[in-house]
Amino acid sequence: MLTGKQIKTPGTKIRGAATSSQGNRKTAWAGVLAITGVCGIVFYLFDRMDQKRKIGKIKQNVESTGKVEIGGKPWSLTDHNGVDRTDQDFLGQWVLFYFGFTHCPDVCPEELDKIAKVVEAFNRRIDIPNIQPLFVTIDPDRDTPKVIKKYCKEFSPSLLGLTGTPEQLENIRKTYRIFFSTGPVDENGDYLIDHAIISYLVRPDGSFADYYPKRVDEKKMIQQIEIQIKKFETEQRK
Ligand code: NI
Image (cartoon, rainbow, N blue to C red; front, top):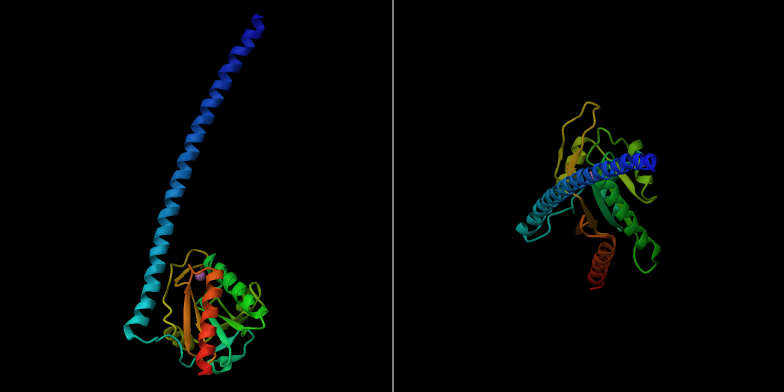
């Protein structure tokens, strides 16, 4: 009996101690989670504000002139197979432009994934024209045609990557009002590029049709593109 009690008592104490330390740990974890959550929300809000600012700039450009001043100008670049391409090569096709960089950690892959799904949805249908997705790099130093080719293949066989000389890239960026800022280079030589996350739809006559920011999901994008296609076809029939 005595032995049993003696064993039991320290056992209870240990259990008690364990529970209290577990409690402390729980409180600590709750604290960590709360801090992480707050940081996440703050980061999310900043990101949203930043995107709003960038899209606002584009809207301003569109609205201040009353007429759309995006796209519709000649450009020339080199595709991921090393073939020279110009705007003329894509006349007669619907084109979806996206400007990004292959080292982008998650935003570009998410957007390109969305674009690939949207394009596939159209290209499966026979009642509607196909869409040619184009990826234009904003990071030509690291994004060589070879790198871009490999990257584009990860998303869709129809996604064509484009790069060019600094002048060629500057020209198309101006045409599509692409703003970006390169971040600091770390000890490994890596850097991030902060950029607007927008897809641009171009009509078969080379004119700009519409743009789709990050918040426009796959379903909405399909609906909105279809509206643009119908609109264009109605105009053509007049
Ligand atoms: Ni990106």
